[in-house]
Image 1 (cartoon, rainbow, N blue to C red):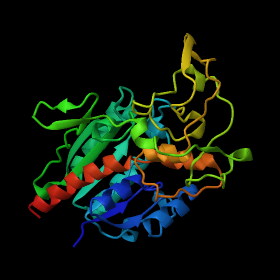
Image 2 (image 1 turned 45 degrees about the horizontal axis):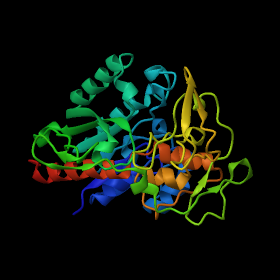
Image 3 (image 1 turned 45 degrees about the vertical axis):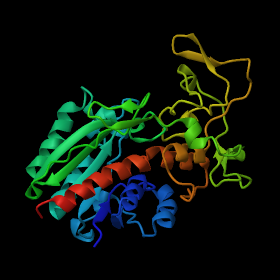
Length: 342
């Protein structure tokens, strides 16, 4: 019988897809963001609980082998206001703990931005970890860079995994499979080179611009292969946004206006402190398309994003856990559970 998972704060379901690819069965999902409902349900084949987690009683959720999901990260982001638990979204971590305590699954996995372990938020993060321990879990956490696990993108995220203490196990993070130059790891394993933009999107046809008001463009030859129009703000132009074909992408963010540039775009030249310009030798430049961002997040092309405005597509993709990283973590958890005492 397949191991089962409950998904909270599901978004479009990148973490969920990684777990199902690893052999888990998804039995419940929750997210109160209307923008993700159609995409999640059509791609995962189950109905999503559309209520706020604050309104969901633990008894409403089926018991599964594990709970997965990352409470909203904006409150902990170094790029945001860093309000942490002073923000209602930051307090949602404690709703996650409430449900975990009531259901007591064999494991949980939570994902968040590196800001949650910053100097500002480390005291609160330690309190969260102590709560996990109090309710009966052996907890491991680490900042992982998705590049080190075959994802063609520089993306650092905090991963927290807990095993019920009765299992007699502690999660050990899987070692990296990739490095900048490849080669041999200290333990003798063979490492591949970081995956690149060419690996991820080099075979795609040319993208099309979104329609007026950034509506989806039906002329896209590949689903979701349209890019956001609009000017580039002074914030966008405050740093380099372009990577070459043979490099991993910059982090895919949850906003189309800050999507990285396509590698065929003009290079960016630094002209002052926090000020860059496009190289005049090449007047062509554009943001990555929604599909290109999805490829970089290791979603298959069969995973279709449904939206009325491309901004919603970028947000869904950027908020997701890269599928390949999720699958790597899920396979290790599956192996541990199969070898556990109970």
